[in-house]
Length: 429
Image 1 (tube, rainbow, N blue to C red):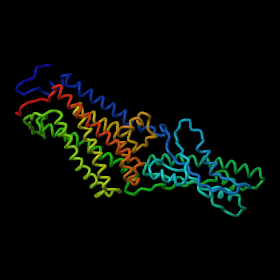
Image 2 (image 1 turned 30 degrees about the horizontal axis):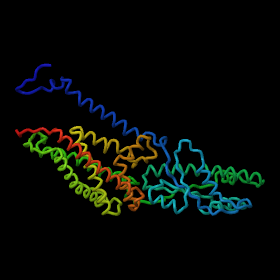
Image 3 (image 1 turned 135 degrees about the vertical axis):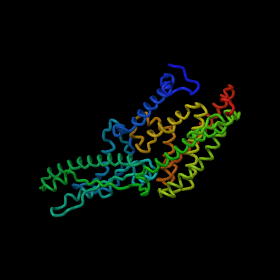
Image 4 (image 1 turned 30 degrees about the vertical axis):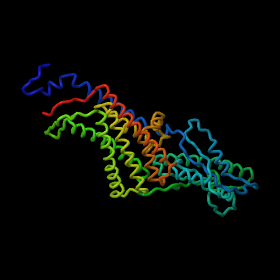
């Protein structure tokens, strides 16, 4: 390669012809693109195949009735059959509950749906044998959805419950058809079809949410706003402080400024950036609430609690960003992007439920911040801010995350200071 022309600097061709210029950008862009594709798409391509212990309630409210000359409770038989049906892949976690317990668990976001056998079920089945000319109502089984758990989670639960109810109807139909045949009772074609599949399955909302809740997705997008505010804000603050202290250049279009370097330890720099992250989290949280609730009319209650949680969530992310940047330096922005965005989004359980994610993402969900924060926001927005709906765990994990961020930031900054690893010192020019 020809030497650089010192009067005008290097030409673009000379720079592009230098292999060393290509190495770091090529490696980093390639690795990031590979990992983004792997992590983002790896968790969403086949959620039905990844289903694992989807929580669905199973309720028998049937009071029983006399059927074929003896007292029967078909609801108990059906629910026992559904709960005991073979499930080699362990895809469904049926929870046999009372009606009141099922409603309680729907209201605390611990069930994605409920399959209920109503009180008059056996009586309705018995009425199918009434004399010709009468049209008794068909027996009914109810599927109760929980849209606050997320549209896809509620849809999965509804689909599984409806399929189980349909199978139970066919099984019951075989028994009724066999009983009618053994009794020698003449049955018309229409009656035979009714006996073969006697149960009607209805779907109702078990725990309603507001119409301005994005079909159960507003909690996810609100959480994403908080995380992005903390992540982007942390990086903007970090760069702004470095420019102000003279450790980074400031370029705006063709204009370039370089301030005198101010001597300061890494630990004190971390303190400055952390305090600014806390202060600006108040601003971003207030603005997010003002826009989403005040302007866009998002359904939300417990507004003081929502603001406090939003501030703490965004501040915790901001502190985490500052700690990672203090530890890894220039590459810290990439590391924090993977921690708070790349790995957090697919493991949040906010769009695709955790029970429909591959094992790796369910493992990440134990500590990745977006899952913890979305559970807390979901509890506040949809489940009356109940602690057992995920809010208690969310507060705990915010506290743990904040402590870990401070320990990492102060620990690594102090270590670098003790080792004499000072940042670049230079005069303005």
